[in-house]
Image 1: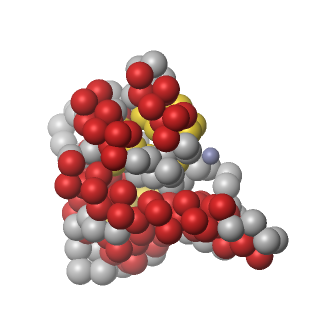
Image 2: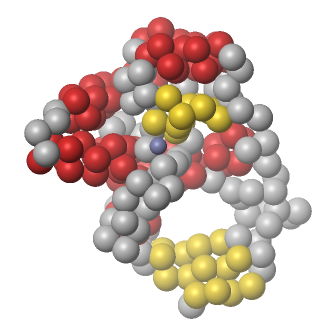
Length: 178
Ligand SMILES: [Zn+2]
């Protein structure tokens, strides 16, 4: 299984043609890229939280290229949803300080960019499980699946930001946080 870390259209196209199952970032994906995602059944992992973070930081240092990419990704994200591109949740582990910015901020970006709250949650559960070829084991509460369960303080279908307030964690059937 191949995951490619690519941002430009050329990088994305080369990676998808080479058989990448997922593209991490994929920030400058153009229409040709989106169509190839669909044709290949590949997954886009847009990592919008880290892009926002990096764009802001680099803009302060005088480089606006990330800011431009960040502004360009919103319409492409909407188009990807319309075209049926599979979008999986990802954070680019290590790209920002998790003590300061919760990784779950990513959910809010997806909803602000056109997903329903349920689609956003599925991007991190069933769709992510599909990407890893672990459907039936990860990302769902069902017989035979790992008992990895969280609870949040509120109804995320009403207010997606509550995904950032995890109040209960069960890992492999064992309560880790209550
Ligand atoms: Zn990265």
